[in-house]
Length: 190
Image (tube, rainbow, N blue to C red; front, top):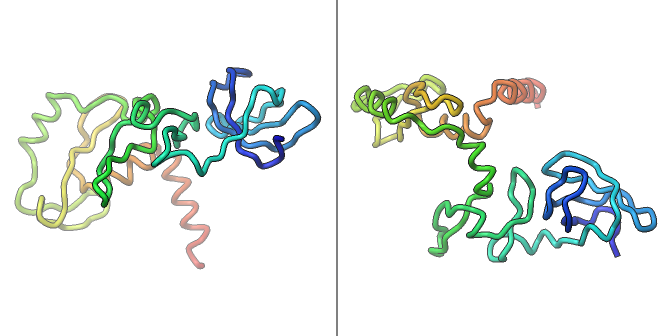
């Protein structure tokens, strides 16, 4: 019996929502449910025969299926997700984002000509990150990476790997970074 706050998975594409999309039930009236599909940020009223309850605690490692953290579609782990790293127990873990969504995140790869140019300019003795201003000895006290524009494939400059990860987490999106600044300002005095 489907009820409010149940997580569900869509069994058939409907209303522009892909099959296996994950949502949660906001309301149930008879044989219809209002479901908020997380990946689309969209509410849809659908027949309950088109959804089934999903125990989200039984997704991801060590289970066969996993929910992508971007599209929120239930997909097969190790098939639809690339291997990311090895955990402390020596088991392979997969990325939280599916292969399809990674394409959008990764964007255009760094151009070979740009990589060659940047390698000829790589700092080797001393480096100050242009973002965080942290001083480091490259490869000893910090790893440096070539930051690049994911829309053009052109290199920007060398930055520390922490700042590169930070930019990636904010999808190189100026508006998201502004939102982060406003958030920090709002809670500065707490």
